[in-house]
Image 1 (spheres, rainbow, N blue to C red):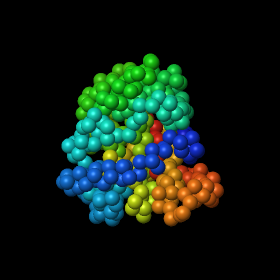
Image 2 (cartoon, rainbow, N blue to C red):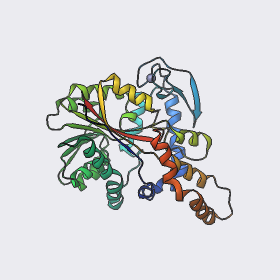
Image 3 (cartoon, rainbow, N blue to C red):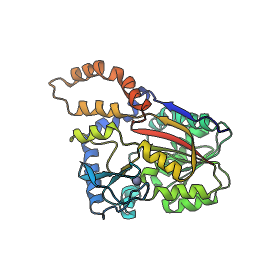
Image 4 (cartoon, rainbow, N blue to C red):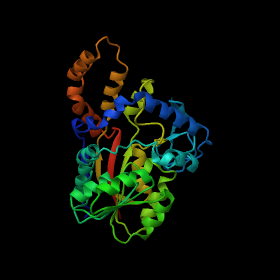
Length: 339
Ligand SMILES: [Zn+2]
């Protein structure tokens, strides 16, 4: 008999709030970066097929921060109308030593993220799989997930294309290893892995030129489980669409496409994978809160903030829970198993 699927909803935003402070401080800088990145995507050719299902491109329906988007008629995946070519992706992630991507060399910040963001991921993964796990982490960043695994005494090895991330992680990791590797060489690593049973891709799939090639490599490998987090087309997108002076967090720059519940389930079915765990939690209302602050019309910002906290932030987790429970929130974590 098939094991019952683990389905979890929501996570308190209060733990994450202090970590996300850069979103507030760096609005102008981030807005400039998104616009520049979208502009460079616009110079690429048009996308001919849906990134998720390969169906011919659907008509555009959404325009924001200089980019247009379509919603796939077949699988409901959200795609930018332009193609995120290897050249575009290289410029975004590997050029400039990966400095385009937000990271912090502050050890306190690193450990705060390990504790509040990555340990809960490890615990969810353990709850979903239940048996012993060994992890191969692709796109490991500075190794925060590997560190969380280490703290739970779980073996993991990570590969990351940004040298500066690897440098940070290497200093902090004790048992688990973080190795520098170009993204195009990771398929080989996955296919040759004999040590691990879980392939983890934290915030990775959506950034790849061909996410399906990654799933196909997993299918051909000896690995049994795949664990990933993906951004979902949700209320956050509508908030970003309405607040033109607020740097978008969700759609734009590296997020050239977004999953939906339908496009996720399409992918699981196509690759004949069993979903054994889902954890739906988003930051849609946190995005709205941030947008209110950046767009406020007030003569006393501190007073405005304290009133907004009383009338909105105080119930932010409850509001978000409604979206989470309906699987229309901005992120989902998924564990799939080969049948
Ligand atoms: Zn599609």
